[in-house]
Amino acid sequence: MSAMNSTKTVLDPFGTTIIEDYERLYKEFGIQPLKPLLDRIPNPSMYMRRNVVFGHRDFERLLDAMKSNEPFAVMSGIKPTGEFHLGTLMTAREVIYFQQQGATAFYCIADVEAYEDNKIPFEKSEKFAVGNIADLLALGFDPKQGCIYRQYKEQRVKDLAIVFARGATLATMKAIYGERHIGLYLSALIQAGDILMPQLQDFDGPKPTVVPVGIDQDPHIRFTRDLANKFRRKYNFIPPSSTLHKIMKGLDGSPKMSKRDPMGYFTLHEKPETIAKKISNAFTGGRPTVKEQQKLGGIPEICPIYELCMYQFVEDDDEIVEAYHDCKSGKLLCGEHKERTIEIVLRFVKEHKRRHSKFVDKAREILKVA
Ligand code: SF4
Image 1 (tube, helix red, strand yellow):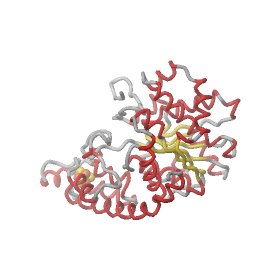
Image 2: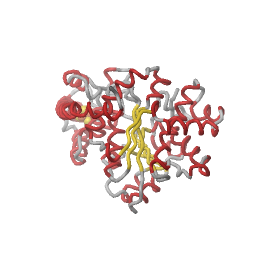
Image 3: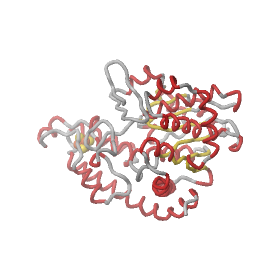
Image 4: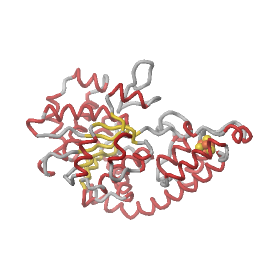
């Protein structure tokens, strides 16, 4: 279980990680801030410009490869437990961003983790995976410049996990992941296989690889970097780099958007009226009365509506800055802002669904699903 306490933050990829102060992570976990690198990134993504991607591990290595036109890879994926939601949308867009910057892109369907962590049988996760991959393609992933696969079916990933198991003791697994059933330790080894597979000879050998993930997944990065060093002599692996993004708040104001609370999040395939209702009922950083808000202004820093716009749905940076100042000054009221946000979100969802329907057959073909 993850939680913030007065002494130490816990990052837990299998639990609920709540971060109250991102600044503390630099010191506590040796994560590097991304901001100082921004000027060196040729075409920073929206998430990078807005400090949603706030940290990294060893990203300079990837930057050097990008700048000198050397081969590099991006790797991430999705746990197929349901429809695409806002968290998986963010990771997918980050993978596509790096692919568009020249990376060979690897996207895995983490069906072993879905089985071990969520008890989802492979026949069921296969169905979710088809929809998820159609989403990825609809967002712009180019399958000709990448590799999409299922963990359960990818022998190279499983072979790496078998080798890596010799480099991990029970004490190490407990120290990184806490006391867990062996299946979760196995899925961590499989994830290490996912992250390092792009460096196998089948994919033209060792190369800088970036893994864009939410901060709660950082333990996998640390674990895999350690394994890459341990098995360097055998495979010549380069320790993977990462970019780390913040965790979105729930629409109900809870610190983390979670599937456990249906009113706190939405998927890209929910009915438009349901999405509109969830946004309408969302918590805000507004004041109890219009008069007070006009006088004191709202608090965008704690507002999920502001976050929804900034993290996902408003592409123009100036528009975000304007909304921030209008909220702070009391010029923008929550009702109006919610209406505007509903309109933007529904427009996006409508177009996305239209594109998604065109990619379902392709997704089946890629995943070899009948
Ligand atoms: S005006 Fe917008 S950003 Fe400000 S508190 Fe209300 S909903 Fe949030």
